[in-house]
Length: 239
Ligand code: CMP
Figure 1: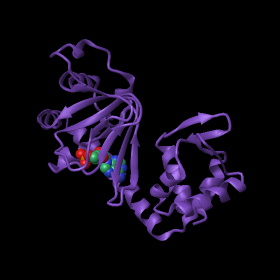
Figure 2 (figure 1 turned 60 degrees about the vertical axis):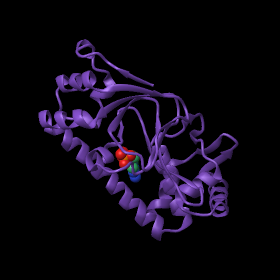
Figure 3 (figure 1 turned 135 degrees about the horizontal axis):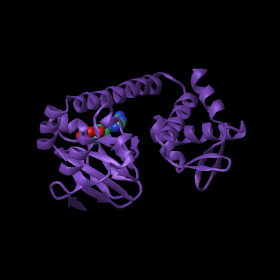
């Protein structure tokens, strides 16, 4: 659902803390945030609703105000791989906007989510007025490239145990799941772990059972609980 704020209405409003804390606005004054709120459009998406799909033309970037968004690609054989989860204050959809090319991945809401959409015309006007905004976008893209490089290397050369430890830690770092009394619960089934780590489901199950037997994880119908983050990290550093 789209809602456009009338001109000047948001200008009178308090800037939400989530925007002020966002890396998108680092180094920018509150007036820049108010201009952003004034000229962007609110979009809501219910849990599991598609926001856009791979290959569509990309006319806007999105800032997550509340909720959570999954960025993913489907392989030709129908396996889905989550590339990232975008949390409040995070941005996505900036690649098509900057490159003027189709969407490089699909996006869906994981839970009920509120977004602000910034369209290309306004983006061009905004970066002229606030060049720091373009620098912030470049930093976000650079940090994603860095993470993607690490991931390619790890998923190409390392053994299954390392790949699976990395994938679980990445999901926890992206704030997927929730804190439970024994640790951090990830709502993942074994096939999803296999897709993230680029292994077969059988291999994922074998490694998850090994981690469980060593007390690093527990496995339950609700997902995988990371009981001991440090020992899971050791699986990476030992690589
Ligand atoms: P865009 O190509 O417009 O649409 C898909 C979006 O997903 C893309 O912009 C980025 O914002 C985001 N995205 C694509 N790949 C990754 C990745 N590896 N990590 C995080 N975000 C990504």
